Amino acid sequence: MKWGLLGGTFDPIHFGHLRCAVEILEIFDLNRIVFIPATKPPHKLDAKITSFSHREQMIRAAIEDNPSFSFSDVENQRQGVSYSVDTVDYFLEKYLDNLELYFILGQDAFHAIHTWKDWQRLLTLCNIIVMTRPGYENKGLSGIVPEDFAARFEYDDKVNGLRGPTGHYIYFTGVTFLDISSSKIRQWTNEGKSIKYLTPSVVRHYIHKNKLYQD
Image (cartoon, rainbow, N blue to C red):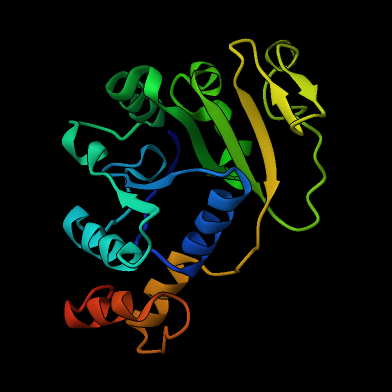
């Protein structure tokens, strides 16, 4: 099995998330993309975040028509802050040798990877897919992580990726960039503006029905 793990706050999920997910699924020939909302994102501990149950229902509704998409509440099952390295550990321990894992994150998040918990171990636990924006110049790990750590990775032109010391790869992969943000959706909802065509209609209806993002 080849699974991609796509984490985030998803407050709310939108077409930007979904389009990137389906492209990564096809590019890497994955069997599944697992959407994993964070309960307590470590970089947003002071932020106001919609309850996990609401975000879960919106994600489930948005991915219902795609059999290659699934949902996991693993980060809600754990106590405390939601750390990605713990989530990857969970999937690797649960499925052992039956799973080839790809951890998916955006370019901006990857550039701050050195601030993540156990980031060095995370980058060698499984394959990493960094979704890049148009015009991105791939300079590998230079300037992102310390040089001594970057030196442990070697570019493999056969797969267009950086092979790490554990045999896993870091891929920098361009995807369609839809300039949609969850924060803008929340803002416009609060201002009474239309969010049509930014997120699936089922998500939009759920937001209005439950009066989310309204002061």
